[in-house]
Image (cartoon, rainbow, N blue to C red; front, top):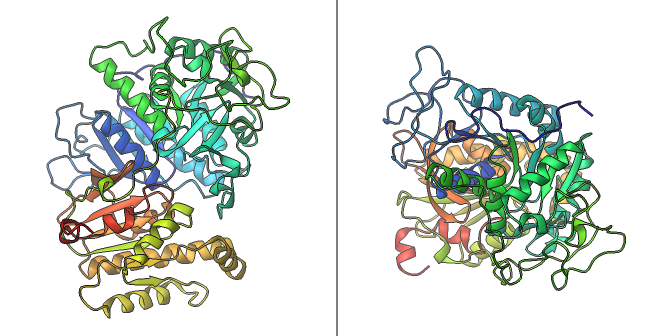
Length: 552
């Protein structure tokens, strides 16, 4: 283990005088975190890939460097870092998000691109760094979460790193160190069948320990519910005992805001969009002159269903598993500071949210979709995600009778020929059939057969190339709204269209914003993570305004 100071310290420039820098490991995750920051009031710039110092917009609509603006137009800070000798300053901003495609690549490549992003962010004056990974902790024992964290922690000098994948608005919660997906343990959820990173374990400390040589600690819900000061004490205590990574429980938005307040002084923070939003709210509170570290007032009553206070009973249904050990696993604490360096229990039940209700369902149907900010032009859907939710959304789209074309890499194992055939099908479509869908999404058994015939890497690369060619061809043919389902699919679309910057617009569903590429070409993209959105999202997002008016 790397020798370092055992402290939880504040780095220079990590607070209100410097923008927050975010490194996201895929494109849809980047749009998710960017809209979470924007929603909290931070002026956010989003970049696809690490900018090279050319073609970044200066906020006037004129050509400049590569970048993305949230289009808020509100006064704020302007980046003052080094952009090149004759470069204009960045548009006004409070946060910078760099979207990478590092989740599924070899760990060494993920580390290299993340360090490149860190160097660029530092050059723009970023203070605190946030590493955004998937809320389902997509990874393997080889990485990439652990290896990237290790190098970022070393580069930022972070002695302890608070982190959690909890994102309650997306039905991801952490309790007793275990990750739940819509109330189901991760290892028992649909993620156990993920084609690249099957998640068969729900125990986050164990998952992270497999990817790093650093020590991992846990802060339980009881400590989080005591407020930000208690969490900061627990972080410091965990660091004093040699832990570098400290996973914190959180089951509702108030927990994530508490963790965000506690994390304000950390050089490096990591997690999904939930903790990023909590951190953004803490920034906003501090800049508004309110104390961000207050948390719940001492002695304030605990809300119904809030989970166990230290030394009290467990929530109903949260049975203490055999061999769980004492301390945070049952609502108490091993150490006086509230942290716990031990394995989390193998099996627990998810508690209710702090307001006494169950975790809310994801929004479904037309009320979850806003196309007001998108061009009223031809639309198309490109779907490559094989997640259960995307397959459900695809089925709903097909039930509407939309024209559909399946990209079959086994039948046509050449990306150019596969794309040409798809575009020829599109050219022959009769008018009036609604926005078409071109998809490679497949149920697990069909996916396994494709991977058996072509190999995992070849099939993925073939479909990514073909999808990009199809996207470019559709836009050449006049498509003005593209809905992309899946992280790799979204990356292929953005790369093929040469999108390096865009405005972040209205959300079609929570965490799924329209983005509007900068430039003269009218175009709107919806980059959807595979598991996000209600069953009707693809149907509603690709509907025309006339169809929406008619109630479709």
